[in-house]
Length: 344
Ligand SMILES: [Zn+2]
Image 1 (tube, protein in one colour):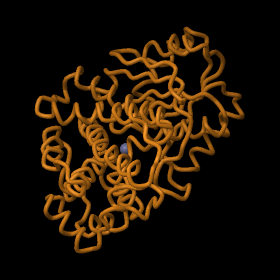
Image 2 (tube, rainbow, N blue to C red; image 1 turned 45 degrees about the horizontal axis):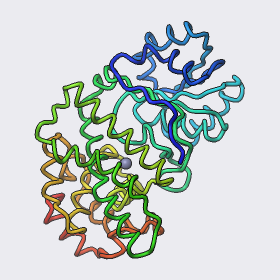
Image 3 (tube, protein in one colour; image 1 turned 45 degrees about the vertical axis):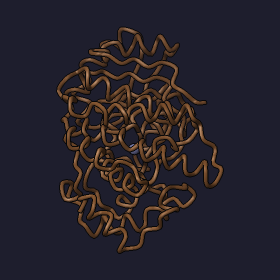
Image 4 (cartoon, rainbow, N blue to C red; image 1 turned 90 degrees about the vertical axis):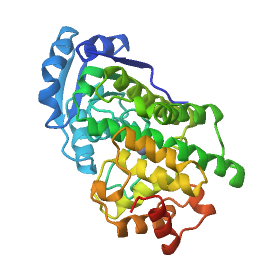
């Protein structure tokens, strides 16, 4: 199992970043990777605590989650002789930092500024330009520092998207059970249960979830962290990513840049729940309750793209056995599925 060593979640904890790193036994030079919009939001809180704790630091501003940024960040880490890489951001910068650290064999710390998907803490990075749309295995962050005040300032759409990525674990874990039963794939019961906890929290409490309440933000952040930990325990993204993610990846491959990852996964979960014979209406109601989209048109995706993505999803990652192996979708079946669930 590859797991984070220290996780700090709380209000205002960004101001303790230096102490947090010291507590992990680090000293020396840091490479801070963030986006151009994030640096001004965090700089005044981050720099005093780093200086106070005798850390030297250099910033790299990532612009896109692509291989170019990973190479640039790696080369700065090398030339500056960085001892540690810290990703501060909502996803892209964290993924760039995570992969650069992996390549440079340096420890990595995640400081999420939003909670829109579980990639902020999982041992996987989604980087475009490496030949496949799904995540690349990396080491998980050694430490995670999640400041609830900072994350609460992000647009609520990002939290709704986070709920979509959480609810996706319902179909992901069911797919994993199919793989266990049909093709004798390794199945980690504890990891599966842990991944399901967050999904169940969303479906059970959806109607009472107030995304403006910091306690709720904390619950969502902790659930996303638990799901990353579940992947660490399983040693694969299995507990977090099934047919609903294959659908999302298929949309991404069609260069549909519309919609956030968790939003697409939420819609994918409605579709795959129906195929799996689960309570898809409950999934849909829960997504509506947390203001996440349930129709493709809400995030600018056409009906044709939904049908195409459904038909091609399994071929994106053929070795990942899911409900789509059991119930093959041709065009007509895909259209029926998307229509009956109200996705198109
Ligand atoms: Zn995801």
